[in-house]
Image 1 (cartoon, rainbow, N blue to C red):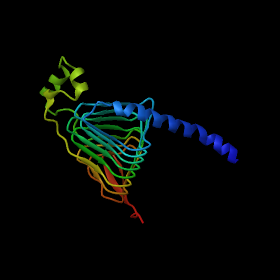
Image 2: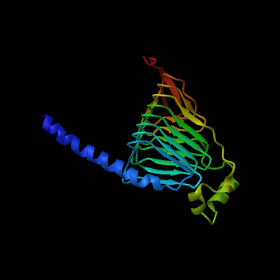
Image 3: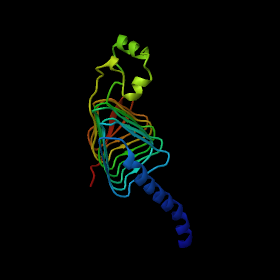
Image 4: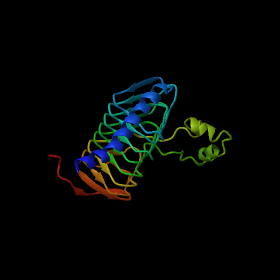
Length: 229
């Protein structure tokens, strides 16, 4: 049994070694304003980490990174944080995204124009979407002009078209130990307190206090949870 356990662990250990080596080879060549990388960071071979010249990236010890990540502002990834391969993260110019220590992002969609803070030991299930902005202008004329912009998609790929500005934004903040079920949607200005849970498919338009279970569209508190011991 022990021998079998060694065989089972060997591929995972080898993959981890290869990903750490890949991180050491690739991360130093990211063209950004400031880069800080901790010890034993892992980078998946399939990941795409792109940065703007004025961006700032800080990666803590033993972080495990995958997915498609574009940083034009500032990104802070905590120690032992994990970003799954099917994640898509976009941090706009002058925007800030922090991912707390030990947090697990299992295939998320983040679009950050201003500020998103994910606390320590968060668990965000597959399909979770977090946007701190409306995405597009509510002004029909501006929105139409944007769709007809001859520089599309070039202008969008840089950051966004200035035609639609200003677009409404408000910070999104999660406390510690937050758990969001599959395919939750979190909209601008939402704060979720420590130890709270949102059921799968919830559309969270308003803040959720700590130690609560919320669910639905729009999400509402359905149960108080016992505080963490």
